[in-house]
Length: 158
Image 1 (spheres, rainbow, N blue to C red):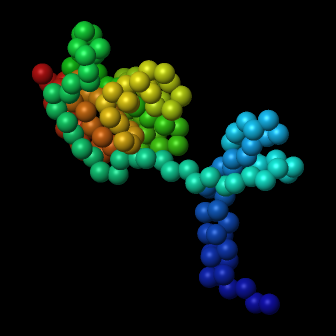
Image 2: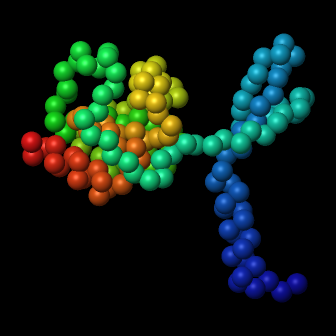
């Protein structure tokens, strides 16, 4: 059988793309307890679960942010301060954090799935996706370097 370059490329693409997406399974044990994992046990029937990360694909900026009554009591942590709400699977969140680190921009991060504060704030902000980035009193849903710089550097000047 003769193999050409096209066959090799297609095969490589299929292997690489299938291994880059983790599969999640759910099953119940003999006590009825629900479990999730990336490898189902052999002794029980497991269902594959589709995992969808809600990431903002378009950037939206909201100025003069009001995060609810509990945050009104706190003084703003300064013009240009950055807080990011994330999940571990979000590519846009990772991109934003890499940008912050590369440009020496200090930030606080709260995971909306694992952090109590992150979950609470996300709910108060009526979050529907990640990342949510707070810069002073402005809110940015999603991440783009141009939009972030416009807000961040205008806050730093004031």
